[in-house]
Length: 392
Image (cartoon, rainbow, N blue to C red):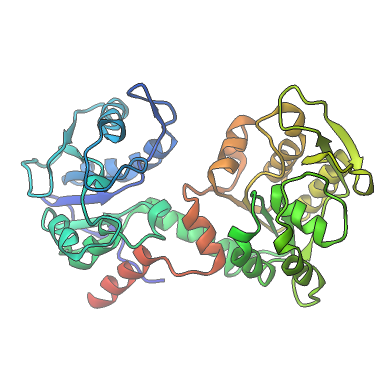
């Protein structure tokens, strides 16, 4: 994959426009989790050290396009970023027609989703953004799967369009995990619905050696294998399709639970029971994997060469249904394998168990992570490849 790299460009005296992923939780005007902001700091600092005037773009939440809404303003992000950088970060509300900024200064442009045409990848809007800069830097892997004005159209028209170090790091890690991985490869794919991840399941089963399903996906696989699932979250309409995946001899082995944790309701007050698969009652819900299953997963992960993890295996937010995900996180952290983890719930679990630093690579992308696993071309990366090819 040939991409122009920001690190290789002369940036002194240049107006550098960066598309970052600063979509962080904000409550009462205060950033409550700054992981994505901190991840972007090296890119911002590098441009400043090179003598650039740095303009930042990001989305926040899902406002009504074309309407300013203070609830989704990036102003709290600008304040928090200023604190982390130790220098002022100007907040620019009306920025599409240009604004003054000097070399060594930082400005944060207001939420890109306030602009009509952002989601539609409007070419005119992309040209307006591109006119602001000498160099456009795409460094938001989490939005790379979307062809939108601030991720795609702007890259078509900017004088120079390149990839930032965070985006390159994501692509390098995913490439290592999927293109020429150390074997065996174990993929862990959790989630509530198999239907929304069916293509990812099919793609992974053609690439990995073992697949560990979690959550509602695991329940649907269990039903496909003929096991009772009671009132568990399960897509019965997809049982037939998953049964075909289970019966395929040419695909990876799907590693199903041996035992499970059940309860009659999803509640912190619920009493949890360890059940063998055949013991799951009609009124019970499967909310986690059991201890025997957790030990089996740990043994498998210990012998893995590569681990790809997206999604917990149980309702880990409730203590009595978090044992499986906790054991899985510890096993991933302890494994000598190259490990990559992505998705909001996965990162929340790693953070909860204080194991984030022990995973080889933590992806900031959710949807983009899944689409890359599926083998889908990411529009924001494709346009950077095209621009890099045009410079040769």
